[in-house]
Length: 345
Image (cartoon, rainbow, N blue to C red; front, side, top):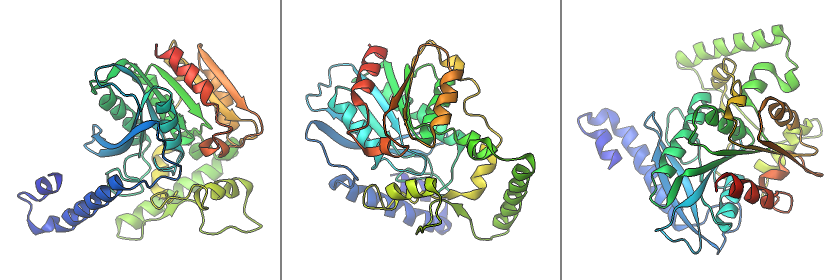
């Protein structure tokens, strides 16, 4: 239906768009019939694929999970789960959504705009505003389901989506509780470098590079993306090696997760602060979950200091950043269940 409306009155000029939409629709139909996740399917939940639109008209693809004994006449608490930065819903986010549904919540794990199975062009765009908007749109969707109690909606943000979830909660008071896992503040790291290590000269040099790249792409040049390399060696830095061990190996690799975003996306991130109003989330509670050995730990530690009560910080012994994507023996699901049961009662 959407493909037909695109073509109506536009003529053959939109034929490439139509073909792309039809191809995507066919891919969706195949996915509905097959389990294409990086984790095992639970027999204790009901799974379905859903989609909803954000305020930019982009359709967002999501996996929805309901408790096995789901009763459509009831009003359930709901949890929205965002993916790690560069990931897709078929990976770690789905593990969280499925597990929390086993514990009595109605949940979704969604793909951000321009990525995964969600719509939006150009593809592989990383949109600081768009990714926050996707959380707002997920709240729109969940709060209009007849079996969801719209006064009991919480969010979980993993890695980069932890920052996006907090940013959304700063202005969206429909979000009643936020949990972050291995949180990354993408606006901070892109503006200031790792551990805020960039000098002003280094930051300006990168901004100049971004400006030049915009000119090249505007003139028809190749779109440049940044992400994980295809191979690593003994000279690869530890952080890249850690992400590679998840995204580029059998452990977590998925065909729709390239980890690459357009380079020019960084300019907007460098002009935006995701967490400048984090204190305003109070009195709604925030739970920060971080690995003891996570390279990203400083993001959560600093955000915890800036947030007002009620807030909680849980440090998982021996865990690194990526361990909390998928290692269910380390992910504190009991803590998450207790947090949201209390916050969304």
